[in-house]
Length: 368
Ligand code: GLY
Figure 1 (spheres, rainbow, N blue to C red):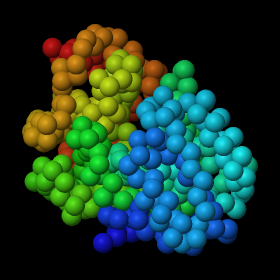
Figure 2: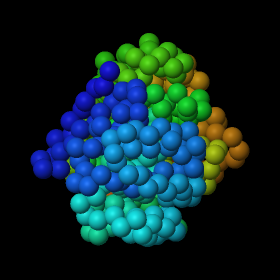
Figure 3: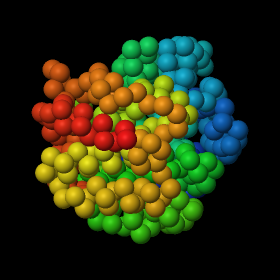
Figure 4: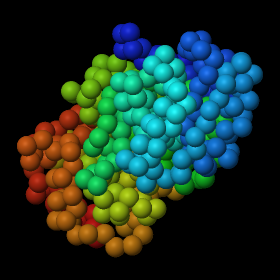
């Protein structure tokens, strides 16, 4: 079964197709986009080992010639050197403006290859084939592309919407449990930010989802993508509502910086801890009930996820140093602390003027 979620952006509209087996049908799915029967696929070595042969067979079965480049796996790939390598490889493959580039992998590959496609010959079309849960529910949809620099994450990039997204939920079966749960942090985020009924459902279905229930996975990815597609269609360039997708992210970014973007904390783990902190802060500010943060934490705990800062191995900086890391976050406008807070589960909003001392107190307590 394939679910189709449209992303309505006028002449840049596209579909996110979600379901098991899409990699094996990629040739038939992508062929209608092609003006000549060839594609350049950029992936990483891990995904290449697991899935590239299947993708190539599927494309070639439709008479599509495939050139493929496999980059090293990991966040370090998302920088200038591999961007240059990718762009020059695409030029060597004689990719032209009418061609299509395929980004095949997780968030690092999607962001890097999307950005390469955005700048190559001033913009070529690209197809996202996300293989991780995080990429399927978040980074492959919505057109944010970019790389990290010495100054920070995602500071160089472009909005460049894909022409199609193929989210093969069967690919999630090859993810390590920790990577799956990290992506699940983003799934929970959608319930928390805008769909209390979805969060209710996740509380019941979460364990089956983690254990590999294909129908539950399809439903969770589809609902997440529906929510993201709706938000992106209403606010493509993050002038307003799209900022809600950053629920938990200001805390997360500070914790990621504090842990050196290392294996100590995966992005989705930081999002989960950040969501718990955002609800705690909301409750302390009298915005939501005290039960809400407890419920968020209980679900994350039941899923075996990191919930508290103390779940992060190794030492963390003190509360003041963490607050300073938050103030560097690019979402802080004119020095004011901007957070995504909530009036309840499924009711997130942008709070522009959060008092720094309340955040400091929260962090001090959370560090205990
Ligand atoms: N990942 C947040 C966004 O796409 O806006």
